[in-house]
Image (cartoon, rainbow, N blue to C red; front, side):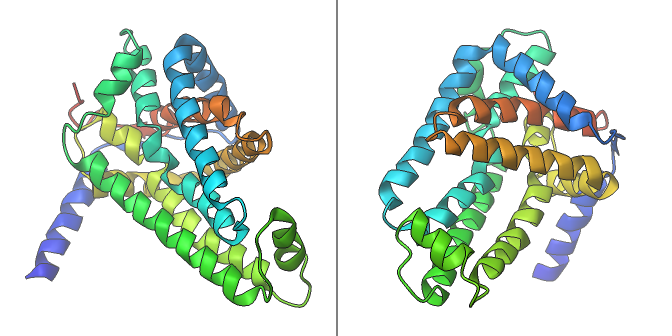
Length: 269
């Protein structure tokens, strides 16, 4: 019975995803997403930067709580990136309002975070579960196989990254990529799509995967830009994230709009 219900739910999600198309994008289109995201950031500076401040503060809190436990901190920061798509919900809402020619401000953000239905909540819980799983896996791997305590960035660099007598760092990267790649593929356009259209969680995830599989090159460039800018923001003592995170959030809305043609589904009010 459970298998039958799961199959029916999966078929329904596939049908939802197939009701609209994935649009072709050129290789360098992600640079255009950044340009348009920057324009949105300028138009909604207060609301955008306030969200960036809150997310940067969350990153700083992670650092404060685990500053002398780098075996935990390394996984916690990368886990933070896994849940970032749901944290950017208010930024997607701002870009959507601007696109529709409507006023966009803090009220838009508050409205976006109201639990109208369970779709975004369910997807957020799934991302949080994946992030927590990676944090625990990362911590267990580093603590178990590094051979010595890894409490500082210097310890991590010396005993994990530059340790030529073990393959802990390679295993850490491989496991991280094994989790991050499917999570990125699942969330590429899922959250802005659910914010914009009446579609289930699994249907939105299938759409993200379709976009990745049909246009892997520009999507890979987009992933690299996200990683580079996020690391750059972290390198400034988290201060750069105040600007970088909302910039990427707005740009991600334009990635969704360029990749997906959702006219086959009813729009959200």
